[in-house]
Image 1: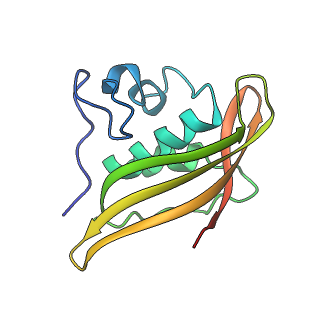
Image 2: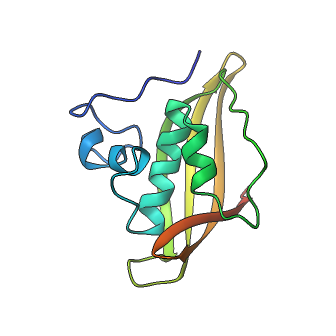
Image 3: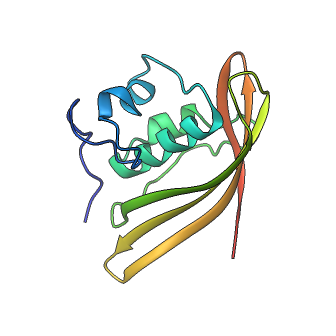
Length: 135
């Protein structure tokens, strides 16, 4: 299993919003439109994991917590994103959190990542700070 190629403009977005790639996460990943909310950034980062775009993930990671490099695991197939809730993170906020569950599959079977992620808006752009894995 490997990361999928970026969807075509009319294909469904990997984040599961139901919108086409060109109207959802595609513009964030190609740099033409930054994510307007913390949730939109979370969705675009999930999509970046799904398509294997480490460059986008690093660019949207806050410098205080960003790793020097990012080696994505090609054996992980990201299958579904479920947003459980958000706190703040709107277009006029400076901070926000997003709780989500991301389902995946590997050669060893299915799994899920349940995380509460923190975001901050600096210079008009949302950035991922860190996340705590939830039980």
